[in-house]
Image 1 (cartoon, rainbow, N blue to C red):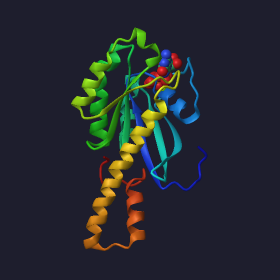
Image 2: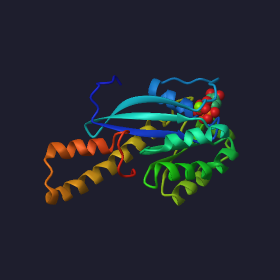
Image 3: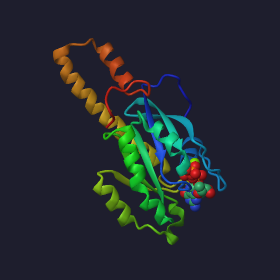
Length: 214
Ligand SMILES: Nc1nc2c(ncn2[C@@H]2O[C@H](COP(=O)(O)OP(=O)(O)OP(=O)(O)O)[C@@H](O)[C@H]2O)c(=O)[nH]1
Ligand SMILES: [Mg+2]
């Protein structure tokens, strides 16, 4: 989608998980509809944006693609700060990437906040005939943490758009609920409506974040 330069809201989201699970390709599939069989491992952090429409609003998402290699952990976890959502990615063909999820999950919770929306992504579903992690096990992991589970393929594009959109919609839904609370409180505080809107928009931009996310 073309950037209109006039987004209603800006949400920051992060991609996290072991090296090689397909984070960078999920991002390039979502933002540019591109896939590379020989993509290089991310060094530190990369960044893309995309605008999406939700509920008649234009939402600009800033997507931070973090390196999965252990040696970058000190750098990448700093980028979880102020994130409203995260895609926690593992490779359904590689059990170790599923076993390591706790580490990534804890880092997101510790640095982005307990309220950050998280979706568990089992990537490389195009190769599901040789999968090492069963859907039931991944679903159970997600259910125990009260998060959603989606299987994707960056290679053939299955569910990639849906995964990002679900996360963005979840963040927006949480945001709308908070706005309703603020509106309720504003009956008492009586802020002018234009000021309320400005304040709410700032709260959900990447630069200002008095409260943790959804
Ligand atoms: N079959 C298949 N291969 C994929 C898929 N997504 C990514 N790959 C391949 O997996 C390898 C690693 O993909 P990347 O996107 O670079 O992985 P990453 O998670 O960004 O890795 P780091 O940057 O090191 O953290 C590449 O060879 C991709 O072509 C997928 O959906 N299906
Ligand atoms: Mg990468």
